[in-house]
Length: 221
Figure (cartoon, one colour):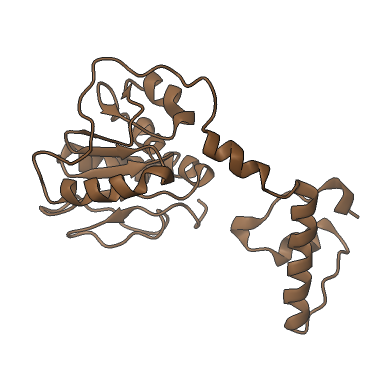
């Protein structure tokens, strides 16, 4: 299993679990709580494929301990089979996944259903953090959080505009590649090591394991 899986943050009798691999999972203690934090879609996708992670999350839900997550984090809950009949929110792009897993999806900044608190993504961090503190404290009512719903909100007609607008300012892939290689060459030269593009395998060896990728065809030799 990849050692760079996303983090599960657990409090109480459990320690901070940096990765799934190599840890012994214990049952949640009396004051335990679980946070599936925002990292990225690909790392959350890896985490949901871990049997240990799914069982770990399920243990928290079975014990009724607080669980909070946002963005693509609910994927893990779906794969653990914990969403049937639960009202929640997430990044809009995975709405259908959660609905197909039995959830009632609400297009709201923060949603609370029992021990589960969810949010749509980074754009809602301010109300999410405020609600998270109250959720962990055991407040009967969480400020700004929607509650149980009867039906799911409809699919969105278009992706979030904030993301589309941000993508317009991103460099083209070819420019990103050139800039990345330039920075890598500068870094290697500053360490007294030259960057030799002798082969795809040679360049991949210089990259951290989590950031290795297939090189553009134009750079392969």
